Image (cartoon, rainbow, N blue to C red; front, side, top):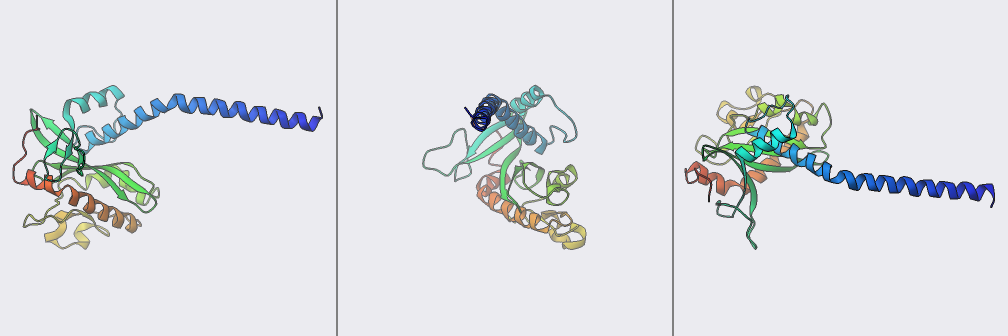
Length: 236
């Protein structure tokens, strides 16, 4: 066997061995990766209702314990009713409730919006009045660091607390991201429906604004029920 053939054979065997090792490692770690992703989502849900702080580290079992105690997953049917499982043939939407002393304090809407470079995924929590935002978090995005990527920072997310998804007449208008500071850009009567924008990230704000409105329109039937005090306790 020539030296050239030996080299080719050695390279082929080496590539096969490395490929096998990487495949085995990837398969073995997949369960842990999925577990970490689930815990991160649970952490963001808890953060959206103020149960955990963004700048503090929590053990995985602590996150899971708080999630099990305070958060309940539901589905929403087309009429805005909370149901425990999706029904075949219906366009049911996922929703989470924050419960305390057997009362619903807030409900959490999953957000999946277009961004400048990819999807923006997070959670928007709304108080049980069906109108007031209690928190907003982002757990996955592809926006530019230092610009649109600021949507994941605590300073931006704190701007959402107390904002409204309805106008002064109680009509749904969603919540929008201003092109700058709200107090400088938006008339006083509309300021409750806007959050401060991110400098240099106008397109990210525009896409997220449109995505939020689309999502919240889908959840409007259940929001109306909360506004009318038709939902106070979890079903079941």
